[in-house]
Length: 256
Image (tube, rainbow, N blue to C red; front, side, top):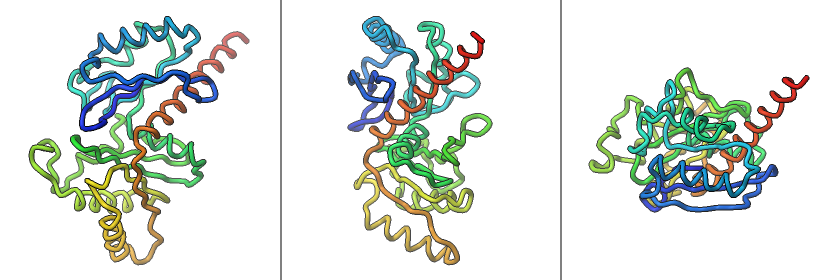
């Protein structure tokens, strides 16, 4: 299950996958069907239909902190105990993953990216940006899961007023990328956005500016991608399969 912004509104995507990661069922839910009651009811219906479902991977545009969704771009789930309620209702292995973390993981798995450090930046149309950092194949989350909350950087942009008050997106992207290079020195940066937010020519100008700031190093590869939703789902599949494998290993040890 993934919650994401599509066509300037929040939508839910249900997908059931086999153990090879191939989708065998897909469904789109509108924002009106995304209350917890609506979500849990639909998950129950799908589990009853596909009784071999072995785990649930749930992607959110936010972060669970101390068991609650403290940071999320979906007001109806703010402060909701998502993982606790999923476990209580469905008694299955559960993994909750941030949307940008999942997307970068999905990108890396699809292209067999073996670079040591990759960063994903996501600039949706109507919500603040987010970032993800993958180091040697592992998502860097930090103590509270807040690694990548670039909207809180002490920059000029005041995201709490967006989109009501416009923001110079190109400038913010330049500043955020500069911060990331200085902090993590990544091999690759994937910029999930569209031409309305930043064009390929604007990105070239950003890269030229960065070469002036960092004349003594090879800059990371910086690529624009419009496949956020697809990579996001791939990453959730990866996390779901990992969760099943972890559960199987645990059961195997217990039996021994």
